[in-house]
Image (cartoon, rainbow, N blue to C red):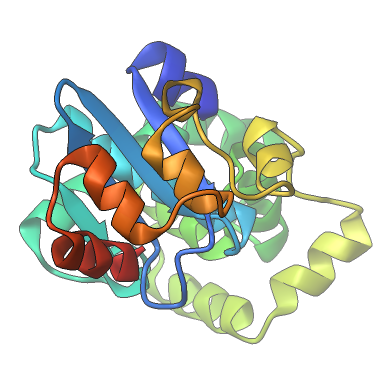
Length: 222
């Protein structure tokens, strides 16, 4: 995901603690775009949040500040829905979901298939269940309801442990262990100085040529 964002799309990725009210953001500075991701949330959520912010970028949306609700709780804002659809297809394309389901061979779909698909694509169990439905693999409404109940009860976590399945240790997971993480484009910037404590908010405002009150308000959002 980091390579797709930075090398593929030229979007710098910033991982840091954004607080419980913010999951991610897409900000622009001139010709450059930066995706901010809450680096303290579960890595499966970080992965989806980053893909969501890339959706805002690719689809030409304006700057975005996303709450956990707007990404993970079914917010019906059409812009957020578009970014979510992009994220889901980027991480788990429907043809790939159908191929993996066929390889795993569970008919009807079981919680084990959901858990294994989640591991395959680096998604949460709930997101994997939804992708199986959207890809046409899972159609039975009663089965969907049962799987959702099992996931809500945390049975997927116990099952993943029994199967010895762990989330992939990719570059995003490794970066999240050493916060804050800044892209190369931000090294030596006012943002880096603020995060490492060598500059105050007032100094950052001066460096970027903005009003100190406005910058303080923006920083509270981060």
